View (cartoon, rainbow, N blue to C red):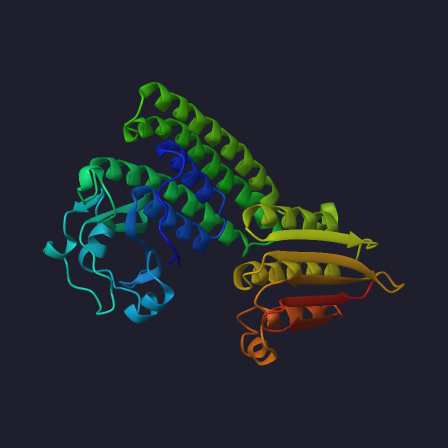
Length: 387
């Protein structure tokens, strides 16, 4: 949740659009994508507040991300909103809704006492075909030509363009998160087909819809054409980059490429997808028995997920070293994040997957060790015997 100073779009309209679209496409986890969409929308349209709600099947929101509200304000506001009033309307209509004052709309049903005051409003659904993935809302336009407040036709067109590609990014992020639950064999068959189609076909539409952005730039037409060409070039580069990521997101079967190559490929993808720097080094490890290799891979995946999702660290290091003369190995996953106190680790054990990691270690005669202290990061070690 962003609560820092608001920044105006950088580098001109189309450059800002290009930056926002590429930022969305580079995120691989749903929560990161949602935050990027909201921050990009607020910045591009120069709004005071932005929010994005992902509906659940029970009249509420499974996720609700805001930008422009501090953590303290968000806690004071209280529970997530229900699907009612203007929020419900955005989930069930096809196009955008622009209001001069949301408080005067007959569908407006009030806010919690701690909710910030909002007037001018722009919202629209994020849709993938017939499915509504979420609804994007903006409030309180900060500035306009001549000092006139309120969102414009240009803002509406820009948000519609952003929403089209938000749907692409969310669809791909959902597919990526689903892939974590699949076996390696399933990833090779299903993820290859689904992600390739979603990324390749829909990113191709970016080059076509970039032409619509010309209407958003009230500048020299010759310069606008040059910027549009740059957008098309960036879109092509993004398609190439994501196509490579798709290939690498399907981890090679251990039986084919072995543990070391599989870990190296996965670390390379995670390093590309996250702001934290993720590295992998291997020293003297040879092939392990199949059961040990699978245990090491699964523990490494869970430890990496924890480090990247929960630690807020800048670096995550994965090392695999030879252990003893019998062909065993030691896996170590270390981050420089916030860390935990030992009681917290015990209470959060199931949430962090420590129980399943210990079970995997025990299943192959190995030993799992967790070391963590507040402010000093976390290290997870798995030692497994050789064959």
